[in-house]
Image 1 (cartoon, rainbow, N blue to C red):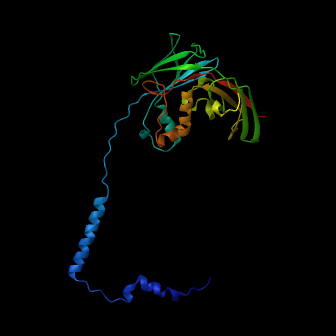
Image 2: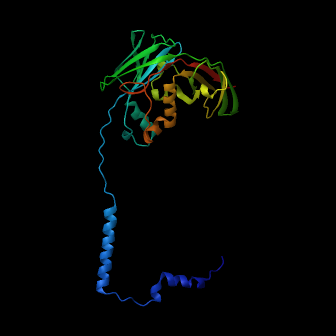
Image 3: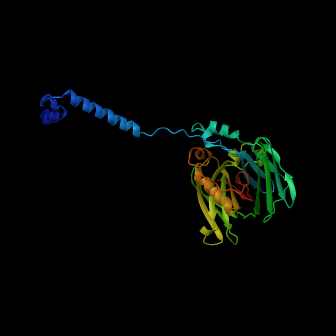
Length: 309
């Protein structure tokens, strides 16, 4: 190490400790009192300018029913029924604890009726929060009416929707990138008129009647939303890169959906997953449910299985 020359620091010492070269100031009692009063006055002004805490009292948010539906081709129609809750009831932390708490908002006892052509169909309960029907026929273009009631809080909701026809997923091809990712290309024919699509990629396609956790239903890996305003022709080819694949088998479903449901899913994607939505600024989601929240939508997906080889 090189030695340091402190001679250049001598003026700095004079600046920091000027009393070494200054004479002792002559302070009178009056000057001391004046300076003391000035200091007290400055301190008073500082603390008086600090805002005082204002108590805020928030009314308890009313818990209302939340609806979401899903149609399974040649199988069943599922309806998910839960209760709304306040984000203030949650704290950022262990996601397992949060999911356990979310389960408490699933409707345990309720009534769900799906009406088509003036024929009411009372759905049967699959598990907490999930009701299903095997008898109501889903006819494209027809209108369906929903009534649901949560017996715990006595709240009920109504909604209506039109059944959207399926658009057939013609082919699904892939190109493997590495051991955990692949480019997946879907092809289909876009019918005339304005159309909106949701493409779901599943790690597995579970039996809907065996699902006991609506927050993990069917293990959706990714969802991509498409509008035919983006297409150059009716022959559509869309490629998406799937990453972090845990298996060599997955499923792709093409869903022809309503513009309202498209907007709803777009908002859900901007909000992130359920845990992010609890700690971020709230989003006012579009809804067609009277007396509650969510989206009552019916459409038939076209599903293809893909096995990577």
